[in-house]
Amino acid sequence: MDVFRIAGIAVVTAILSLTLRGVRPELGMQTAIAGGAVLLAFAASELLGITAALRSLMSDLGAGEEIVTLVMKVVCIAYVAQIAADICRDSGENALAAKTEICGRLLMVSAALPMLLRLVRTLTGLIGELP
Image 1 (cartoon, rainbow, N blue to C red):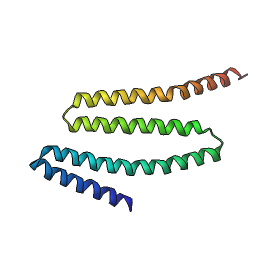
Image 2: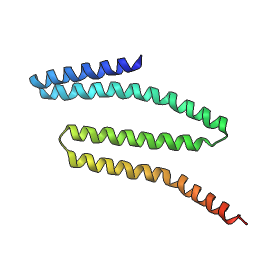
Image 3: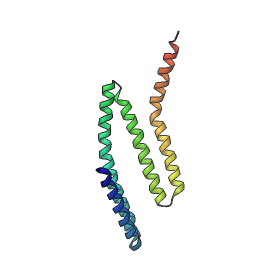
Image 4: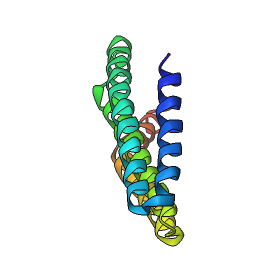
């Protein structure tokens, strides 16, 4: 199962990083970053499969591919912002982490805004057509 592989990579990386931090702190941080990069590469490959499944589902439902694109864009913004904020926190920069999260949230709203405006226009048009 993939979850055991992910857990194994995370635990081994954490132990190795903690061990190296006692000897050479810079190597401990580099080890943690390398382990994180491996985990992110795994996540990216899983994301491709999820995207393909969502596109297929939306195609079967007759919905536009733009919905899947929007959802994936927002999810990616959320993950990238969260990972960056966590790195800032790990480095002791809590204020910078909070600002990173705020910027990520604003970018998610900005990405979803065109779709939201189109939905409001459609609803307004439907309400205007009621007898």
